[in-house]
Structures are given as structure tokens and as C-alpha cells.
Length: 198
Image 1 (cartoon, rainbow, N blue to C red):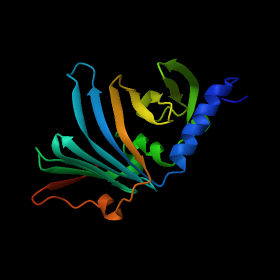
Image 2 (cartoon, rainbow, N blue to C red):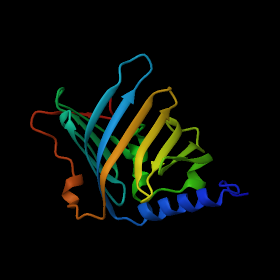
Image 3 (cartoon, rainbow, N blue to C red):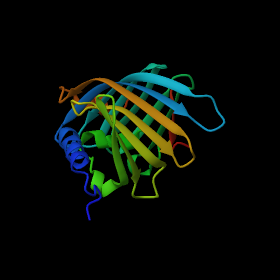
Image 4 (cartoon, helix red, strand yellow):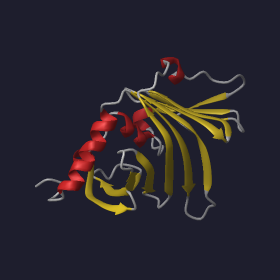
């Protein structure tokens, strides 16, 4: 039986989402992210996200200024200007919540990766909620807010530790020209590089 059950409109929407993002080579979008950890105050950051197949990401933060998160497809680099520290780790070993966002560019497969998929109208948009099939991931639930243009406007991720990560996306551009050098990390002068995020 299909994971989508008998919900024809939902399956159609998910297939449209997969087609839109899986067939794109590059993507550029403004983001705002809010992280809420149990027992701690929330933290909101913002900037511009660039994605390029296969598996390359660049998060240029404007708040806080200078923070940088880059994936070259194999390795992840996180630079925190306030500490002059670079954390370097393998992409496949990373449990950073930004790593799952690679599905925005070529890895979106709802029937393979998710279960308990539900969709409901929220104004003109559609809210899709799903649980990951694998229990080995750092998150336990994902929600996508999809616009009538089949753009992912918001992303809500619930962690295994009950933390919450919310993203809002605006000004999305599909297939902009992005120089491959944008995804090559160059440590800032004087920055300490720490392997494995230790």
C-alpha cells in the first residue's frame, strides 16, 4: 500500500515538490532560523542560503555577522567569528540540523524517507507533516509549509532531544548561476580549525 494511502491531492502535491527541487541544479534563498533547546532561551539567526548539486551548501549569515556554514559535498565547516573557531567534520557523520536541508536540492523522496505523512490547508498554503522512517536521525518530526507556487516557505524540525528548529524562507531563486568556489572553505586568518567538532 502506498505511504500516501488514498490521499490523491496530497500525493500530487508531494510529487510536485519532489519534481521542483530534485530537478533544480542550484538554489538561492533568504532564510531565518530559530533554535529552541529545552531549558534554554531561543536563538534567532538569518542570512542567505546557497545550494548546489551534489550536496554543496553555503549559509552566509548576516545575523550574527560573519558566521559561515559550508559543505563542499564531503566535508562541513562551521565558522564562529566570536570564537575564531572552525569546526570541521565529515558530511555523513554530521548531526547538524542543517544537513537534512540538502533535500531541498535533489534528495527529496517522501515515500522513501518519511512515514505518517499528513497534509492540511493553512490559508492558501499547505502544511505537510511527516515522521522520518529512520530512527538513526537527529530529528523525530518534520513539517513543511508549501505555497501555492510549490515553494517551501517554512520548515519545522523537532529533534530527538525535544529541541525545535524553525526555518522561514523568502525570495527563492531556482537555478541561479553560482560559482563553485563559493563552496570551497578558506579558514579566516588566525582561526583555529578543530577536527570532528570536538
